[in-house]
Image (cartoon, rainbow, N blue to C red; front, side, top):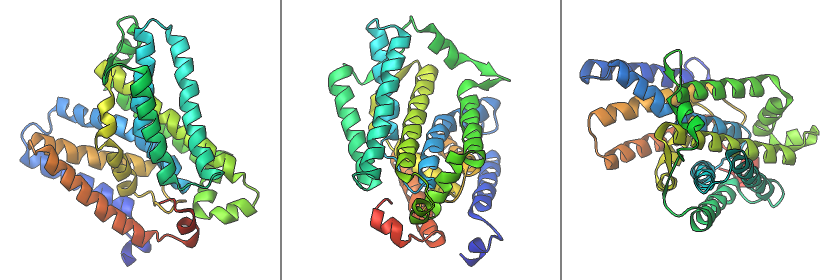
Length: 326
């Protein structure tokens, strides 16, 4: 731990080196791992996960957490596709869902910033509400296909840029734009200030409550973007993903990449490295035909270890404990 704290070997570097070692080991031991199609599959598999981690990373840097992201991703996209299948013009369906997604982000922010509900409970409750409302009122089945009339979505899902699948490009764009926002804008500096010392940020005059609302609106919109990209690639969206382990994978990417859960630390480079490691690991386990129950056990173990290491490197202070955030 002392080596990590001194900066000699940061968590980011350790994860990156481990990803390289894992890649080399898989390449040497697994037939077909280095096949071009498999390498592209690794990138595609981490793209949606990485986009979700971009939104989660912004919230966690600001000393929060958003457990509603996967619900927003699946249910917002399913609602939009259901409206389009029913004949609603795409622009109108998009505008309605956009307003709904922004409303979810605002509600999350209001609950956390003004009602002072711990982020874990507020976003968990919102996730359940969004899933229940959309599934019971707006869609008739778990899987909602992209309507044939929405050819632009289907074409987008098959698009390539420099031979790279579009979801990989979108992950790169989302990570780069978020990097620019966090590094060079007032919003980004305020996020780091709040994550580093919430009370000091408030004393400095930073509008912390509106900033919290803004963070959760951004994470909700990023989650919706991930859902649209998923639907474009698979030509449908399955709402059962809400009950999968995807949310834990997102947290795993953020934590193992090196974004401290106590806030104020890390950035988009950590998200990219974390997504790369998880993508390589999951791909290898898939080639090994490891049953899902063991894959989940391995991921859960890694997440637990990462949380323990994070708690040692970035101990919770009194403010975090009082907020009950994470």
